Length: 168
Image (cartoon, rainbow, N blue to C red; front, side, top):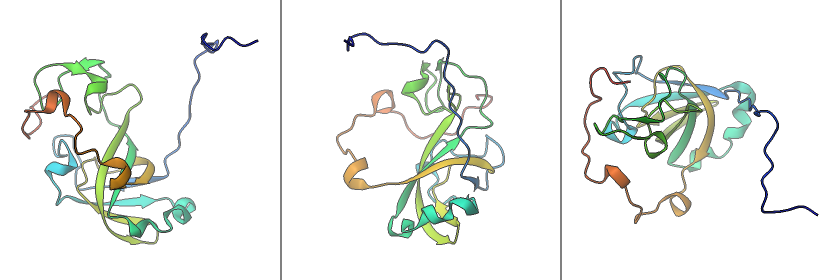
């Protein structure tokens, strides 16, 4: 009989392979140019190019005003589990931040969908570097995704600011 209180770990680390479904095009070619968060630069427009073999998956996406983009931080620096994020000088655990130097290097942005032309989405509020690999797209649904009473943790009193110079 199986003991449900015991966890069995694999004998060797498992690997997961994720292939990009597209590419994100933005006006930001360097890390210094990209905003800390898309909400800080809502007028920034980009194009999300979904590879043709996945274009059927875009059916009905025009009905949504906002989308989640999940992408690879392909130009992030060294992973540090505790570091000072862009909006604070105090170090925090990487999972308590949205810093790009993460163990699995996945980013998440909410963007406003402006239009769709076949397999290309025009979006606003983009905050990623040009030519960033796109991993997935999900619709933002306020009924499921908005929690007005959610706490902001250490960010509660932090104001928007530019990225500190020299900080990855």
